[in-house]
Image (cartoon, rainbow, N blue to C red):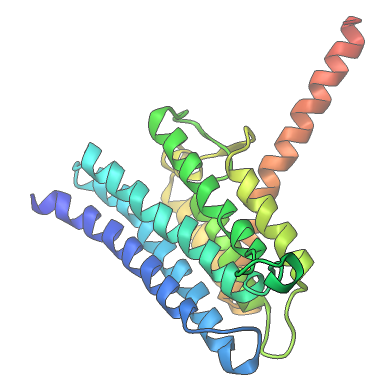
Length: 255
């Protein structure tokens, strides 16, 4: 029981900070200096939750306590943290003002267009996680993993500052694109599987030194953001290469 408790506790930590993100974001009411720290804190909670999420699986393997209960708990936590929390954060930051006025429609209420856009993210995250639970490739992910997608949205408040925000249209394009990447058929590598196969002490020391140097030079935020962007781009690049090779084969074979 105690072996199963440790990784499950990390999954609960993931869920806890996802919930904290939602509660903190709910206290903000628009893009102004007074609310800036709420958005930053909500984004940071998602990032902290991602650390918990990244550790529960390795701990379960370390203590040999993998179970279906742990897998389902991890999925439910991921849906909260990387589906609901990013969607709500974007709603409070950019989308709450997008609606069709009741005066325009002659109805007793406004039509919340922004709410309809915000729900796209948790819907895609739920589909992505359900598809993964039903069937998944041990060597790769089909679609952008929900933790990576959630992290991308969590970085947006940190990229902003209390006087300058990413424009609404750019933020919406990023938001919707990342959501649909989760349910796409684009394949992304599983870094953890490659690390386990190719792990050596020398490589581990070299990796730690490189990461430490980058953090010292650029700070942790930019390094983490860069890693996430490179990971997202890797899947898109691999897809382009695959399509190019497929097209070249059809041309050369006369099909």
